[in-house]
Length: 379
Image 1: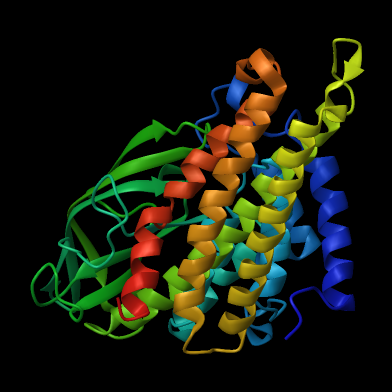
Image 2: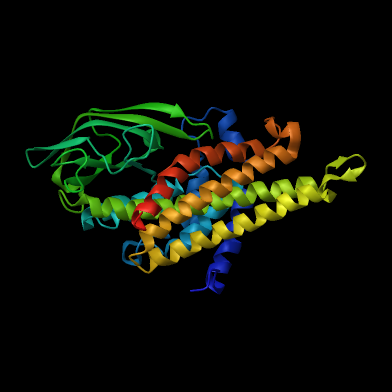
């Protein structure tokens, strides 16, 4: 398939670009909520506007009230989110949690998806149990209790954990910590007893939690998918989230590059625009090429995921690794070409560097995914 958008997708891109540039711009959202030390880290009014635009239900099936679109379309929205650094729960709610709920029962979908589609509900996912993303090892336990389960353990860096109406939690119902099987996913409501959140503000001003489960009791209908068979659902959720994070990373890289190129056209040094210096032109050209390669890798991963290809998992890691490297290059070049002012809070370029650092770590950094690519390729 061609690595560019068709006419319908291009129309969606135009709509998302205009909306995010007007409603999700840095001054109106990121700086506004950061400077007010907002405990959520994002604006709920903007999230409801996402719902009005139809963005929140892009990956939700039509029979459940959504648009029934694919990861290419979700990625279009995510790239514009990244380009404008628009703080929102789109990635955790409309991509990760929506993917998990798609494997849930009619009752679960009916309970949670309408609020998501309206932009009134926020969801989180609790997977990691340490400083680094290592979903292969899950030690949090879910023990049988009556007709349900009792959850015990801790999850770290749960994005929007304290702001969420529901958290998708991966826990072990059988086997050892490193076993492939024995994983079950649960939909844990925000008012569940014996669940506590220790909120932390990340480098990009987004909010996360270290969430403790001290014998959280859930009914059996909180299970997403099959008991002990949650690894398949977890993997589907991770693939969707990794490709989504890569799409947002392309937006971060593009936004930083565009801002830098614009600065090169305005800043004068020694009586000349610095954009006229050949060395900076070469660096800008190289960066443009890298961003386009990264975007192509993301579109390919999205297409494979939408086509349910067995190669989608491999390409998701290729895209996540490539985008992490490219976005890192884009923000470093941006700060350097801005000179000393690039390190000040007055200029937005530093905010792109901060978002890149947080997004690069989310669901696995470049080293993690480069290792996965090597292993899946037989090395």
